[in-house]
Length: 539
Image (cartoon, rainbow, N blue to C red; front, top):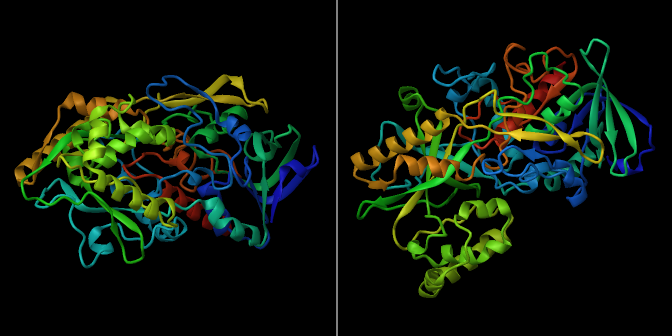
């Protein structure tokens, strides 16, 4: 059953068994998995079925350094489905090393292992609609999938690692009917949680204060409350409610994203084939091979997790001589801001770009037709631009782990939103280890490319560092602000995602990640939510 909080009488007190706050991938996965015959479930979603600019204003906040972090509202969406309405669909599980304590990685170590989460990855993969849970090219393509660069061999990198792509699936649109039919589940749209009331000992949630867009308020009293509001809103709500679970001032700290960028100029050796695009698995899923730093190499180098993909050069540089890439410069005004960040310089297209388009008209027209057919009008969409540059020179698109840092944090600002809740303030930090991870990994990859005779990478360490910070905090990967730990001395929630020191308050989502790994987080977020559903169902 799906209802609207705009129709709820002001002052109403709603009672339920389980209250899930947030209708993004974590909240929806939890609601679909959870079923308790004696405990009805209520899911509160701040937005509606579709986005509304007035509601999305609640996402606004302050950023300490706008050169390093995008605006607080970017990459976020208040509507059923949350950020899955705008995600790119990239799926990959965390690696076993990501869960382990590592002497060279400060504040590392999860209180659960990869094996603990492994049973939930497969159903999470199904919910994300990313095909089979097969994340090596050998497993996903028994008949073989061309390597990224022919002849590349390395003891430090594997090119068998795979990433898979969702449709991308908007969880709100895809699962709305299933949610509406779910026995015992009610969904209340336009219902924004604005405060948490606790009992006198601050050991349990007594009630949630909730507001509708008009400003009318009501309360929800639940046996169990789960905050599934993302890595930014979760600490904001906890801190705005008096800091429940903050005896050691840990909520909002250890804020991580990923360190990512495009760098260097990769020259394949003569005659070496390059396959930097996408393969299609038997189940129809788009997949892509990656160059992944092996765990042993991470340990020997003393750096974080790292992957790289062969990528076209930055479209802003016309030296690529590729019409489709130059055409992207003309298309900038029509692209979402998060995509234009990766195009490079923003000046108006110059004559060399016009010349590229004219001299490569067949390639440009073919790309446009393919993009319309396989992206614009397809249900399972082509993931991204993957055009071979006519100049034959590629770049490295890298994605690296960010080390947890207690000084990288979310706090409350002095300003308030229309419901009177303090806005969030983002102070994102990167560390010397973050930059060293990228520098050392790129240097190792360049050496192995050269030693294997597969090609050579032109770059400088300073260039790599600048490229790593050009986009600042990467994308919408808001992680670590209510980190999981075995002890309340080192984190906010326990191994079952229950807030330390409380009986009935839980957190679902990227906020609980103790470390970020190199993988995009959505698949793991969904897997953790499914595991939490089983834990709550058994309680």
